[in-house]
Length: 275
Ligand SMILES: C[S@@+](CC[C@H](N)C(=O)[O-])C[C@H]1O[C@@H](n2cnc3c(N)ncnc32)[C@H](O)[C@@H]1O
Image (cartoon, rainbow, N blue to C red; front, top):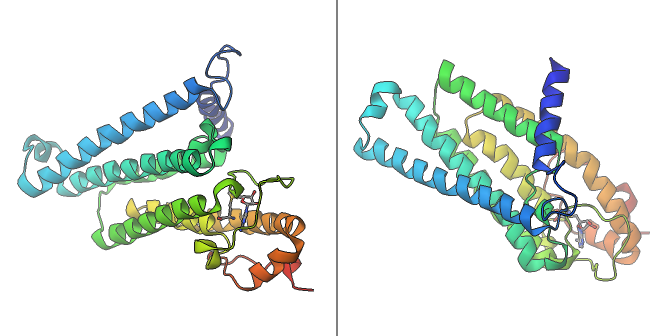
């Protein structure tokens, strides 16, 4: 069962990576125009259709616009349908924003990977599992909680905003992958949002990810996303801080001493002590 699920996931990943396409086509490399246009086009189509669905369902809830819906679905299920459409709109907006902010503020590194759609097996699995929780509830025991939805929406908007501001502020020093050697253009950013949070784009992603699950009223996955994101950043942040200490030995320790990580349960940076 697990092997079949893993194989299915790997197949999805390989399709998303355009494996098997002609090597010299405009689809195989991360920077190929065909791949960028395809991902942007698909995200745009999903975004557009879900904006329409969301609008129709909200109008229906307010003015009983499509009476036939009430014959097939309960009130809770209709609420869950606009809830899902809103979630897809926010999800597509997140991935498009990742690409466009990189394209504007760090244009030399922009590729199809900048959409962050297909960055890991774990991310794809997390999306599919959380969708499974939501749709299982839709069919078996539909419910919609307005307060939890509003908290989730607040976290998603906060997370999305802070991440975009961080990426714009960090500019050419920002990279979706932690750099293993220092580039000439890499300078330590300590101004703007980086003067409050040491890892603002991670803070944004952390609250955005948990917010998406609260917004969906996914009890199990709100908890699982919180645990998984904390574990992920508990590994990634110390590794990144160690490399930044090596790149900026004089500046980074002082910077680390005056800023806050912004994510709970992250151990303090032992290597960042002022000597
Ligand atoms: C995905 S970005 C994340 C940046 C930062 N941790 C954040 O959350 O906003 C990772 C890259 O940013 C670089 N980086 C992290 N903090 C930085 C800073 N304050 N100034 C310049 N570069 C930084 C790291 O060297 C790494 O290559």
